[in-house]
Image 1: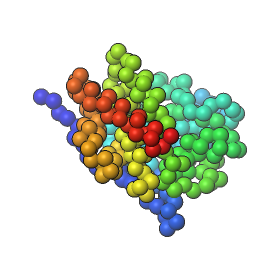
Image 2: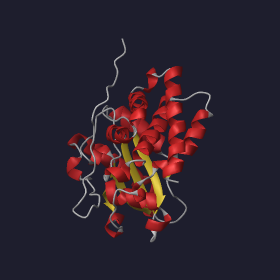
Image 3: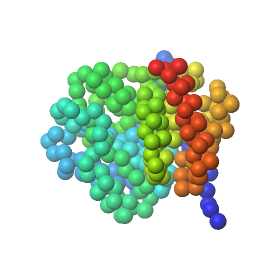
Image 4: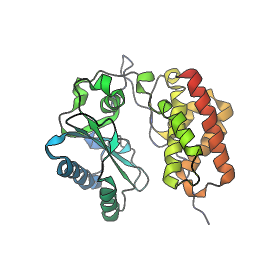
Length: 264
């Protein structure tokens, strides 16, 4: 008998200050104590691999917001490195560290390790990373670049996924076989791109999939069922069949067209 992961309201919308700027909710106090050794292992791995080229290390996502779910939530981390050439790329030792951490800590699902170059003009050269640092990341090593980055409001400057949804969709439909991880990554982009269609109307920001789905459904009720199914398949990727996959593709095709009309 299958045991499904049910859709739950995990996470929340970010708060805005009195001027409408998004408040960064990331805090060390939100990180459960049992996760502290994992964070230290990650920090040490960045230092061991990057040495003097390491500028700073950041955590983002549910772990720094107090809505982490053991065994389900990913631990998202990234490092800023000195020099040029790295916009946003996977750390080459990520797989090895993931194997070690998931073997030694049964509550760790997956750890993301990304690298990006430091730049005096990071706001212009790499606006996506600048936005993430300022609005949703916690610096755990080095000099916090967030102190020199302007505040953000929930508008197009905070949107990321709409830029990727078409290319991800076209790449996805060309695959003969899709892994669970590839399916989850594609659905995550769809759900967040759907939220970006309505973010400015909502006047608030969230990366959390349930709340992205909730806001999207208010403005596009005719696609609510499809988006809810997408969220369910994200939580239960191994149970998807051909008919279910078709509904994902139909939602993706519609989203690509809607994003082109509204955001591009």
